Length: 242
Image (cartoon, rainbow, N blue to C red; front, side, top):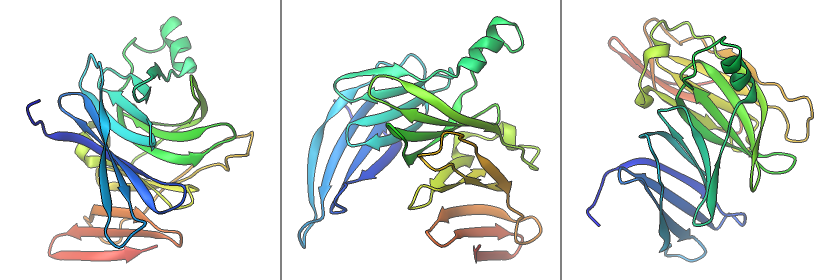
């Protein structure tokens, strides 16, 4: 097949910590998998196959949940869970469907702009999704269906936040999956996730103050001990730890 540029890349680590699976989503709507073994002095890379995705619209976000499960969001608002080589199903917010029925919102689902795997839940894997309508949703993904665990609206002080493109929106998880950071335009939001065993799931959101005037986040990541961020502004660039 002709080579196409990647539009999404994601990875998951092996349970033994000695390997990883990297997945690529291409413009040709194919997911390619590469297994990496780190058990020896020289890493071993093995091509683990490809799966064609039958997408009607262009994808807006991509995330690997496990070595054979991926989440693909499209600009038409759909969010699909794909068991590669087996099948797929769609995640649907039933509260949004009820508002469609009662005419409270237009029948156009907002595009999902960012995805992140959020560890394990009570029965499956958890997926964090941010949509263009400003909603943050936490899903639990099972083998054949998914459940919405919690949702909340992200209030941003950046007036252009609702108009940013996918390159300006991304999420990063902490190693223990208890926290996430959402970079939305010129703002950074810290998200505290409920424990996977809690029945009363609730998201806690906090917008972080920029470290100096007119600062723009260019790189943000979470470690076990805190949040690391690299900010740039007029005649100034600096790394901060919170």
